[in-house]
Length: 115
Length: 113
Image (cartoon, rainbow over the protein chains, first blue to last red):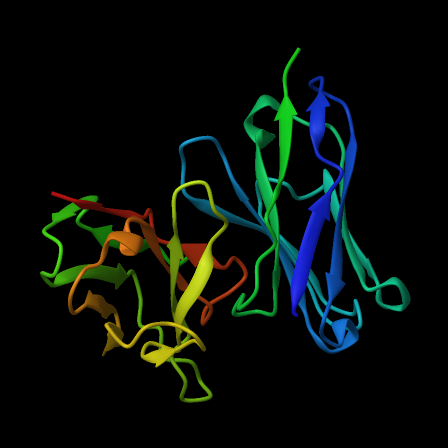
């Protein structure tokens, strides 16, 4: 079964850091690009970041550029999002999604930035 | 950035009746490779999003055939031929033609009257 499982969310103070993980299974992870997409409470979907299959191409939304870093370890079938200098407005459920056209999504992990 | 505008915001529907959601883009979504990268996603209450339709009109595996997508250029539609109780949720369109960034519509909430 194709599956994505996010982890690493939690409560963090403004200015703090968190590292999210997304564990992939049931498909050849190294063949697919990946995305992080977030959803603030009661709001719509917002694309956060993209990484190509080989990590050669990386993009970020302007809202997180310079603060977030996407990476992957194809040997461990895992995707990561290092989030630094967190702000209140980063509070959201963070999803990993497979491929540019996002055909498979994880269940999400909740990040709460609050003092 | 390409702006995706969905309407209506909320769509109350009677069970068994059709429903239609509109998605308009601020520029044509025809890619230089000839494809149009417009997806539709369903998000049921308390669940993560699920892709229903890709490249305008292609249904994903396991998606009931009561769901259909159509459109071209800047104007797209998701139709549900006969709404069932399990169709309640929020529907989003998303473009993958002019990126980064990938952009989503604001969502349309489908509810039962």
